[in-house]
Length: 350
Figure 1 (tube, helix red, strand yellow):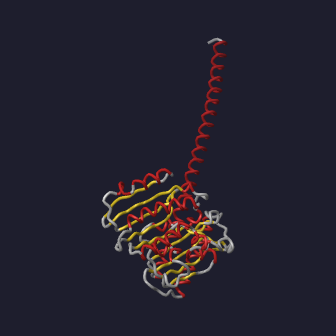
Figure 2: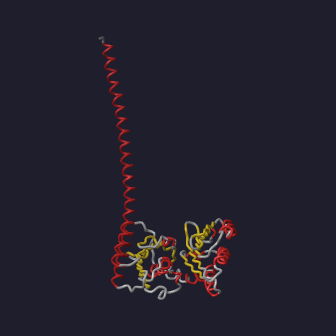
Figure 3: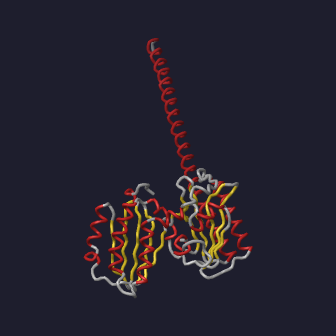
């Protein structure tokens, strides 16, 4: 082996070491980056899972407290309503012992109904013999009507001067609530408020009672042309022996509907009542609420109709022209019709 061969071997060895070092450094850097990305991804997934678990556990905690309250007070019904100051709306979110889920469609404004009064006045309200000792008309108490309650007690869900909503217990028979019932409900209401505060999910619900803001809401409801029409129709139907009409208003934002839309509703309702209420034995129940972006008006009648589409063909066409829809069908013992009107035709969308 001469000197040139030796130099070549040494040079090749050194070059191999350098290449190996560079490749090892690059591989190690990529491996470290992948490991960091994996750890970040894992932390993100864990964070998301923790948030989901927190939300689930919050709901579970509140439901558990409501179930315990139901057992302690021995009532038929327990419900929680949440107040949102940004929209000035109160909605029933959770219920124990509900006969159905219609309570979720109820929209209440400040000062209206039992929940609106509790939030506005920040005090406990009891009605022990509905509707006889209720203040105002019974249609202002949709939660009591749809759950067929006779006696209710409602307390503020509040913590550190913040109003989060209303906790209500109810009985479907007449009952006088004792002081212990009131105290138990009040305690659970405070516990729920603390859970909501701790979860930090209702930061924008910072309400201070504004008594002047809704002082004329009662007048607005009864001055509403649509409500006036229903009250008048209810009275005239009984007087003229054309059956019975009962109605409930689940969405009190109906006061914001423009006069043009109200007149359109009245025109179409008149056609429906003319068909459904002809005899003294006819009975029609009307429910007015909200579902998604639509005002929903639901009719249930014991009146028999041979062909729903032929009978209400013009109604289908008129409601369709404004972007709404009508569903009607015969059912055992009567007839069912649901009319949906898009809220974007209102002056103040809900």
